[in-house]
Length: 451
Figure 1 (cartoon, helix red, strand yellow):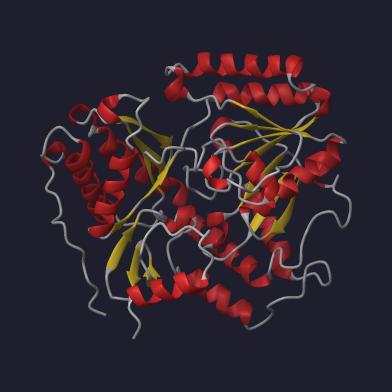
Figure 2 (cartoon, helix red, strand yellow):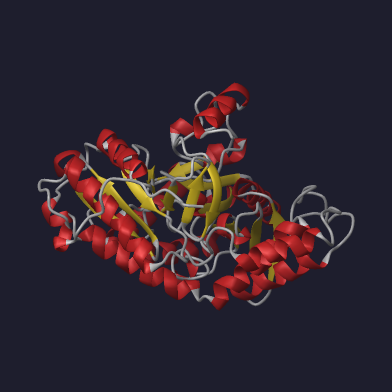
């Protein structure tokens, strides 16, 4: 039987090195919030496939739906023959994520593909070409999406990039001084000035923004900015696009982050946890905007595959049955409280932020936000891995630890994972040696499965 080391050697021999490898874990099975590797070691999953497994690994009803659909129909291409799962999933999405009085959907394969198609729809709807995006944004790795994406490390050597893309600063509350309303006013004024000295508003097809930035570090947009952005887009006939690829499907305590703000976009993009682990994505929007796309200009051979659609329908049904929106709020409150408790004794913890169960902790050297604790964060992540806890970083300096655990995680599992994280933060950047609130910490050993 091959070991993890064997599989990693085989991977290095045949897999393109440009594909990131964040850990040396080689997964064999997974269930709920746990992953077991090929050597039998268990890992508590605070990553969830980067926000994909909100409903948990291998939910039995999702697996059953996949198997049942595979017995009926694997593929026809929706362009060639209509099939029920595609239509049923679009009906479900329009129900839980309404965009005005009449909502329509387009199903695709990935978040990047959803973003690409949303931009194409916006351009056809407006007859314009320019797109406004934001600093610290991540929208994918295809050529257009890499242009929209901010972090240079994701796009080195990949240019020239798509033209007529204009980047504005994200209204960052933490770095802007903490007054959300003042920051919103300042950045809305900046956008209005950009319409005078950078790009004419009548040339702008779309503004695309993450309400909670994913790779950018879990920065949450101020509500006043979202409302002002909606007003500006309405004033100038610009399509407003919310990228909800990472924030969607109960992660923030609602089906979509936009539902926290009371602002409805013209178009939105979705993927990750929508399929319960299978690749599927969507563009959702107001019918009159969606229908601006000319036949043949959107879609693709595999978009809305029947098996992926069946998985998504079952996933959303399970989220409703388990009330994962409510569970996300409980999980998020717990995570936030535990991480905030580190701050009095740990100056390196400069911020804890997010929405719902989409929470990140930012670390800086000696509490100086201008000195990101990149190396220490890397050591913390490695130490957590050695103890059987999977966590990953975010932010342009990789000094933010983000938590995207499955929302079905048990209270005991959540407590155990947070205890490990707390101790490793204190070990590497803390000023003391005791656990927060006198909590007993787990020994630094991993648990091995007996199966």
